[in-house]
Length: 250
Image (cartoon, rainbow, N blue to C red; front, top):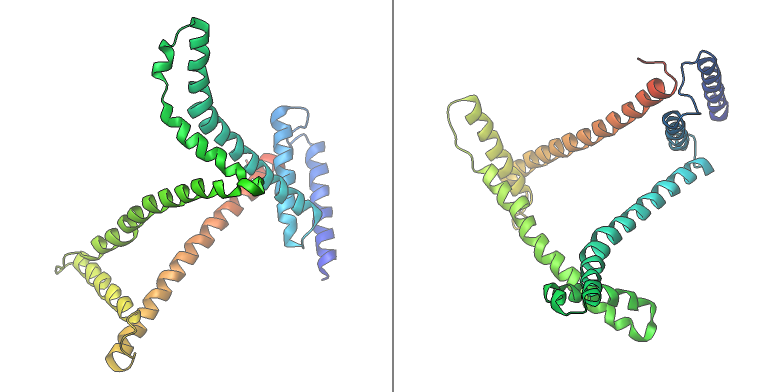
């Protein structure tokens, strides 16, 4: 069957179901706030699902709206949580109180260290000024240096030390000891696979081949878990369409 004919049949069947459910009063009504929200969510869900047919304006509209809303929300949160709460509100609030009381006593409580990150943040906008664009290098260097200094110890702790700790397990004549033995042998085989100072032939080649199988099992399990998580999201959206929107499930 032609793909366009199949999509037309699906859309026609969906419209028929919508009309029947609306006539029976089983669908979410549009004249309530909750019902309007359900219809909007259903519309955007169908817009995203329309990409299964091909790229189209409905999918692009939903995609651009999602990206725009996410970017706008992140920007507002950064302005409210960082700029206003950490700098403008405490700093200028104290200055206003000092002028209102006609005394410098409130200025003593100002944390003048906030001027440093505020200045560095202002320097970022000098990228729009060609003659002063070099000032943006200072905050960028500070951000990258701080990020690297915080990420490297955390990465070592979480990805190396924890892995070593999980591999150093006791052996015993039990199922737990057998599982620990499998872990130790699997880690050893994988390490031999990444040992390139000796050609993978003979015993070394056999061990490295076992390491390849173990790596493939790990990658397959990780990929399967990712697919199952995406399938669970798909099931959730289908349940929303069938239950909350069409009212076919209870």
